[in-house]
Amino acid sequence: MGSGTPTSTALAAVAMGLVFEMLWLTGSTSHVAKMSLGALALSLYVFFPFKHEPYYSYQAHLDAWPLYFTGSLLLVMVVLHRKQLIARIGEGSTLLHSIVFFYWMLDVSTEYPGASLALVILAAVPLLFSLFHAWSPLPPSSRARLGLSLWSAAVMLALAIRAVVHAVGLAQGAGAEAFLECFLLGTAAGYMTANATMLLGYLPGRGTFFNRVYFQNVQALNQEHLARFSAQQTTRAQAAVVTFAVGAFLAIHWFLRPFPTTVAVWSIVTLVPWAVHAWGWWVARRATGVTPVSGVG
Image (cartoon, rainbow, N blue to C red):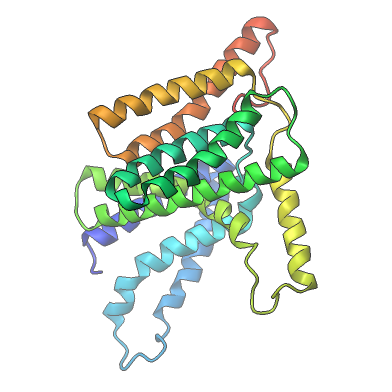
């Protein structure tokens, strides 16, 4: 991973995306500068001898430094701002994630016809569950909110892994497309990591193998999921627009394939919540002059 290679350029793009998102998150250049200096200090660990290293090569350590620095930036960001990085969701968000996941599984089933039925069933069950709660006037119970939040986190983690794999593939080349995708990956990396902690925390560790501490941690995670799920229900109009607009977009993509499925999926996940928020803001502004707290939930 020598200096100036496509990989080091891709890591630079990811680091730039992380810094950009930290600026957006904190609104303070001085705070971001301190976080960056902290990450720089942590990354200097790379210059210590590697375990079982036969002989010390300064160049090898220098080549590995961009990866350590980028990882340190992400670590500092998540440790200091994890709560801010946990996105609030609601019935509309989980419906959107379920539709996107269903389409993704349909797309994957074309590559693996033998597993197509299992993939469709895997995606259809949570989609029906999300549709019921988005269209039903009944408020979801605590158990339903927990299940929907866990499902949303699982979908976003799966999409994040897919995005990372795709970006790593692009990073082996060069060009504006690779740089832009790696930059965007950097802007989303903090949210991806915080989202992953909300799932991986349910796995027992060596010192918490289904013991008292483990169940205390699980209870705390459950409360985090419930706290981030908006109590504001999605209106039927919002559910209808999300369902039919996203369905129409994905149908067009299925037949025309103007860009890869990864791009289509992330475009929906990123842009639709903003569009729904803008719509809710405009409707509330026109009716009462009051901006809603959340137009996405």
